[in-house]
Length: 251
Image (cartoon, rainbow, N blue to C red; front, side):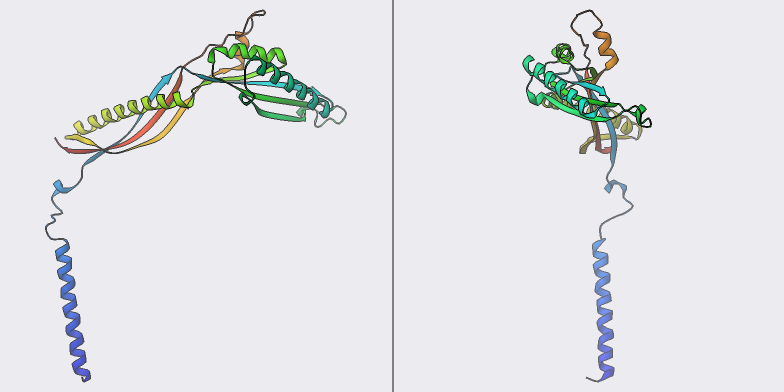
């Protein structure tokens, strides 16, 4: 085959391939009218929150043994003695060792004496987080800890057990979905649409807000001479956010 013939054959092949490419492109778009808006998806997307509350069935008490002195070893010894007494009293009352957890332990030179070499004082704190399943016994446990040598009640937190929290969370999700549908319905009505069901649902932010009692409130409750400490409880709230995409159609 001479050079002129080979060139002619090559040009013919290129023209043929170009024609095939054009046919494929036209076949892929055949029957689709991009101006027909009825073929496009319609949806309404909303984010809504739901909340549910419940009485607490679990409590955590923070109490602390404190010590001060001009010798760090003596401060540590005092904290150790307090630790032994507090733990013994609480376990004798009925708590398990696992219910009494060290939350903080610290012995350091007092801030006021750091720049005064002639007067050195150390401050020590051993703080405990005491877990209780009986929320009605919080005041009694505080009295036991204080009588055994605890110097401070720093915070009381009322919360929910895992099982109870799951139950309340389910209610919060149901409330969030009801709020989402309400918002979506308003949006649809305002747009000449109507909802045709949800096809995408997901949860976003979720959280539990426990009921907390400050140390000042605890002291106010325990001012009575020899009277048992009484602690007032409050509801725990669970809040959940949902993202929902609803299918919509022309009303």
